[in-house]
Length: 319
Image (cartoon, helix red, strand yellow):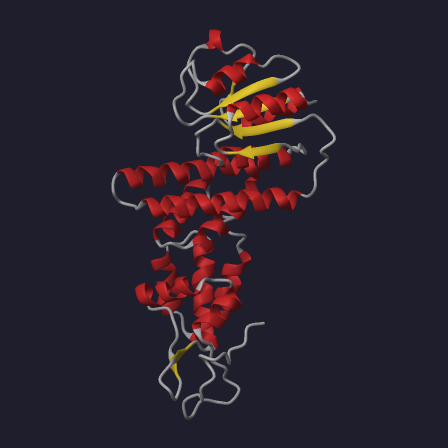
């Protein structure tokens, strides 16, 4: 448990403060609530939610009421409320009403009573405020409630598309997109881990992004979707070399090879030659907008339309 009497906090409290009234510095509060110190400082600077007590030495400290207000802000953001609105609600409540408000906010399972559009709005608001905990709570809640396929189609993809549009309009910085993407990847991986160990003795499934393609989130989403279907796969990540894929498939003879391409690729591309040259017993599934639009040149490869159809096709192919 964090100790309020750290080196920074270990000053005598101001005269008149009861001995039992502990006060906490920002680092201790951050550790106690699982919020970064920078987030706490941002909430104090932007919204006025922060420490109200001063020690005899003039240092500001959080009281238990201050911590309750911060906790309420965190809970309301997790439910999809914009940070400014969450802070307003927390600030206007009298101290006697904090416990009941926290109880009501905690009853909600990270946006369980919100529709997809509201959750997307909450993610955008948390991203704009650089609040990774808010993004994580909403994404993890959607994954638990709707499953990977429902959360991806209804929440994650629309939120990322919105953030991309706002960036192209100059209304958000690229750092917002990176922050959101990293949090989403982390939550998808956590969701996969929570499913538990899968049987790896069945058909071999390989998942990779084409050489020079930096996008790995579609692979991680597919891994999570397959895990929900009880299927394990080998995730080889972004920028996987064509020669390495050819060598691996020759050795393993996998049942499924899924390759994602975001960037445009031509028919003389080495990865295109590798994937279209594969034949049964291996089935190749191509994902992403980058592949050449030439059905006659695809050989045995098929095209993935979306996450749901990809998971369903793989599940049917492996029985």
